Length: 60
Image (cartoon, rainbow, N blue to C red):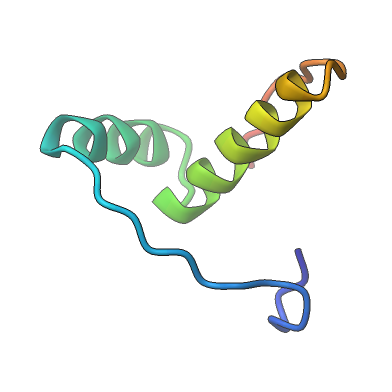
């Protein structure tokens, strides 16, 4: 996804408080934004659904 926004769309969803807290904890531990964690999770889910390799998360 480009940072210029040309190849991206905004998605809105509702999470439980526990889900958000867990995402914030993961993001804080790895010095990234929650949005980045969500995008990585979506990428992994898509790979799994398509039968592709499950690559490790690469934290910055």
